[in-house]
Image 1 (cartoon, rainbow, N blue to C red):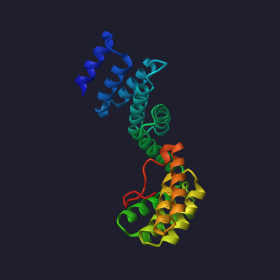
Image 2 (cartoon, rainbow, N blue to C red):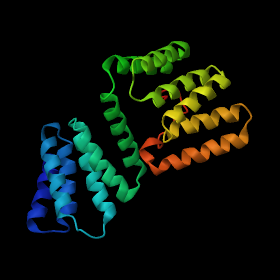
Image 3 (cartoon, helix red, strand yellow):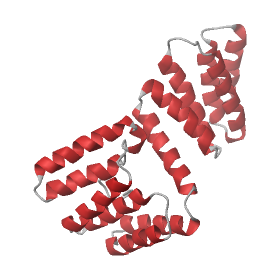
Image 4 (cartoon, one colour):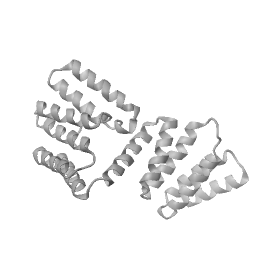
Length: 232
């Protein structure tokens, strides 16, 4: 990786091809070396500065995505969110949307009280282990502790009920989830699944349309939650 980064650097100095593209490739190589991650961010920044101001929006989106990923690795959540949002606005790329989702969720979690975050993390573990009653109880406790993302907790509660085939209770929880956050595409999706389970196909179709509309802010809804490993 170090040698490849050096070759790209030589090409930049020699004026070969697009400086922005070469700087991006050089930075990608540097990002593979943990001790050079800060250098990688600097090179991605140079690539952004060198990028043409018109056209080639997808290639600029690639550089911004890469810099955002590097900033995320360094723990700069706000910088990563800014770059990834800009990249998504240019490209609408699902991979960027998925990473942006993770950054935004991490940022929101930091705003929640630590005891509430601990309850949610424990609830997720219990859900993955199939202990739905205990998981549901911890999601409920997190709500009492003023967990910032109430919609996430209600979605988790709903999925616990759904896994126990308590569909009426699940539906009420998903209704509460979308009431707390109408842009929670996962909760709309899960509400639709529950309505299907209850035989309410027309209402399920309407909920699926709401889930699609949540894609206006795609980071909210790219990763559907139908499995056992990552509920909310």
